[in-house]
Amino acid sequence: MHLAKQLMAIPGVIAAGEYAYRGDRYTYEGGLTDEYARMASILCRANTLNASMQAEMFSSFAEHCGCRPLQGWVVRGKQVSVCAVGNFFCLLENRQGVLNDVMTVLRAKVGDISDDVMKVMYSKIGGDVTEQLV
Amino acid sequence: MELAKLMEVPGVMAAFTYTDKGDLTNQMIKEGNELTPQVLDLLAHTCVANMAVATMEARGWEALTGQKGFEPLQGFSLVGLDWTAVVNGNCGVVVKNRDADYEVAFAAISACAA
Image 1 (spheres, rainbow over the protein chains, first blue to last red):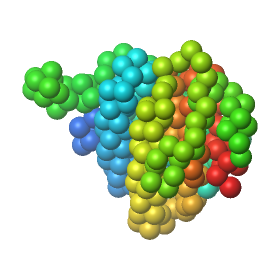
Image 2: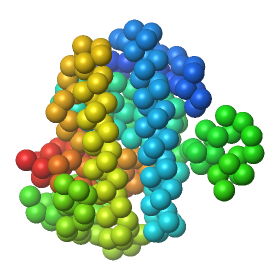
Image 3: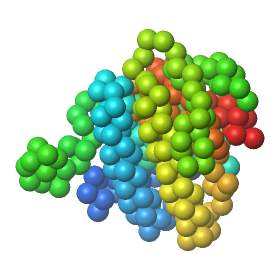
Image 4: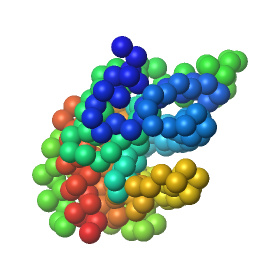
């Protein structure tokens, strides 16, 4: 089953989607319009890149600090939360147990990214990945 | 709330407090992990910045889409390979991913921030 459909099966999930690391392609399920899903994809990609850069910086203080490669992030709102792991995002209600269920599914299916997420993103853009990161 | 209370969160590796600018003010780190006060200080600065960005995005999203329920934000979490940082207000915890209970961590942080 596609991961977004799997997430949508969790009661309390409002929408879920997948975005390309380039940000110009996306798929989604649930309660968003196409335009809002496009905006959410861009927002999640930008935040993931930003957080990934931050994780890189942590490792300059402690090389094996356990923070990198970054897996994702969560923004907890008053009644609604957004989480992103890898190139998947999920919009959910703050009901008991929903966030834990969503993160369990996302981390099991997408998390523990074996490659550096920055390198993966750059590789999707093209060019010499190592050279671009030096 | 005392840091000792935050150290009761499942899977906790460290608990810390910080100023509005992100300067570390206090910390407790469990033995046997690579976290240092320097890492926590950078983490606190990062989280202050991320909370500001997330607030801007939440406000913009609510205005653009009409969808409510984000503001005021209750916290931000950075999910690393082995651990996750959860912050809100001037409090933060770092928990092991394999033992993490995100909802308990957010609740503990919100209680600390209150």
